[in-house]
Image (tube, rainbow, N blue to C red; front, top):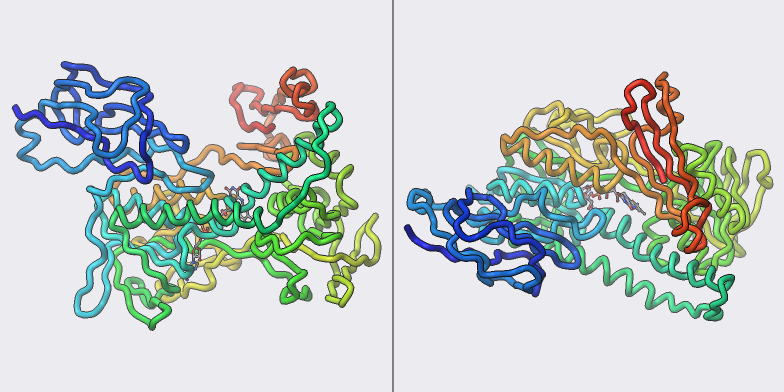
Length: 533
Ligand code: FAD
């Protein structure tokens, strides 16, 4: 029987990755796809599967070794029948790959398994699977479909992949929130006896740091697409028929014929009527992330996660912040006791928080933006140096001519789907923000995998019991499953367990004893329904 050396496959950008587990020993029989070793970089851990069935003849690595692509891992005495059936190159089981960042791509890949790109016939492009939109949902779906052997075209209107999350959402906001968090901690140290003095802020360098993080991740995606043979087309795509899409490209229009499609066109910021959105002092989350300047007085319209995260950044960098929210509370849906520590801190730090208050008018004047309010406790009007409007996101379902493919959108532009993420048209799927809430990157990613696997005929379904949400405010608030209020509103008898962080030595040590951990149980069964911290 022939011996074959199994090397480290293409694992993306990484070099000198540590062997953290050796999962086989000499003499052991392994099946194709059985894991041989686990490698771990600072970004991901990856199990390397065996491309063949056989018996381990030698193990060439030990725990702690640093290895790069091509290094020998295992020598395998391969079953003769195996070689006759032309085993595929190793494929890394996606569930074994850790994401590189929130919403960021799997960093491990196998170049060798990349299928051929989309084919042209008679001047017309053809894809087995076209994915419309390259956000966390779209790129994940495209990569998974390609890994499963499909010829995939990924259509994206912008020059970089990654969608809202990587370009103007999760990633840049978290890069800035990290800076804000460290600044706050340094500030808090003063009371504990360490004073670094006032910070000197170089906005240009902060911007380049943030842009560098975004560039690294989006550039990495382009490479991963290439390695997998996913053809990326820069174009605005719209359906023409149930099997064709019109692609408006920088250099003209062309038609793409497809067997199946995955709509991953995401969402955009909601614009309110009567607001001078064309004035640069009136920002949305996208322009706020550009960090052009720090206004003296900033009004944040919208007390949801995005508004409060951006408020955290601008406050740390020196803005005096006010928040106005139409509903009766900030971050609606979160239990009041979980929200309380955040509200208490924000009330101390911000100039004002107006809840249950409507913005009735906004005028751009030379000296600032004049805003009129209607609500108890709010002034009739006030003037701010800048306003950030973060009142939610709306799906892009109205911008892709879905009706020409027969795909139904609801009145808000969301596309209803089944558990396999299939729309009402059986060969057209939809994933991510465009299918409805929660509008979160990890939900989009998971749906992307589900849709790709469903298309490949695997028994996949999107059936989450709970999707975690995190507000990266200060303090952070995180929750999953049912809140206590939701459970009670659904008529359930619940028990609640709370652990106050004032009793945690760690929390006291870092000077943040205000938090709590909360679990919500179904009384009769003791089943965990939800949790928050
Ligand atoms: P999107 O990321 O919206 O991507 C859709 C893509 O489709 C875009 O690239 C778009 O250009 C493209 N597209 C649209 N129409 C067309 C067309 N006709 N032709 C070609 N291309 C098209 N989520 C989290 O989980 N954690 C966070 O910390 C977090 N922070 C956020 C912070 C901010 C400021 C914002 C705005 C959002 C944040 N989110 C966060 C939400 C997260 O960004 C979204 O849930 C996620 O990006 C949705 O992914 P998606 O693939 O559905 O769509």
